[in-house]
Image (cartoon, rainbow, N blue to C red):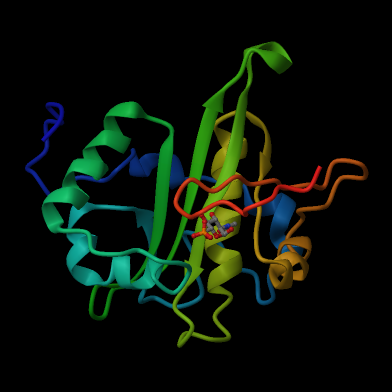
Length: 201
Ligand code: 16G
């Protein structure tokens, strides 16, 4: 386990939960109907908070597997990765808990990168957004994405970007993201699969 965190193992958040207090939802209030926020998420059994180690036992990885392949991750491996993220800094894995049974029903990750450009600014990336598909009509997708978007703003990031499946473009447009003219590409090289035999020139 990495680092002296000052908290009993497993009882701590990945990042300072106080950062989620007093996010300014005024600029995005029109994106949700009825209006919600991370502190008033619309149901008293919904809780938006940073990831913690116990979430391993409450369906966090199963939830991520609704997004993509997770594979087998032991609790030991999970804890090691948790502390690697925590000690590196810049990882804001944020979850929605159903407090009735402590299950994790939504998650998204904000990652910040140090830059020299824009006067040594920070850039934000939105990653691994997933919401349990049995909780419909609760605006959980908007809740979790807007929470980390506002957190990125609060941390001083000059922009936040994402790539996603094409069918999710309307969702992200509905909450303020846009495809910038001349700058709407996402390119990928995969290291975990066999490359195509001939690359187009
Ligand atoms: C989506 C996710 C990305 C995730 C990827 C996994 C968002 C906004 N985008 O693109 O964060 O890492 O799916 O797919 O959540 P992959 O397993 O094919 O890389």
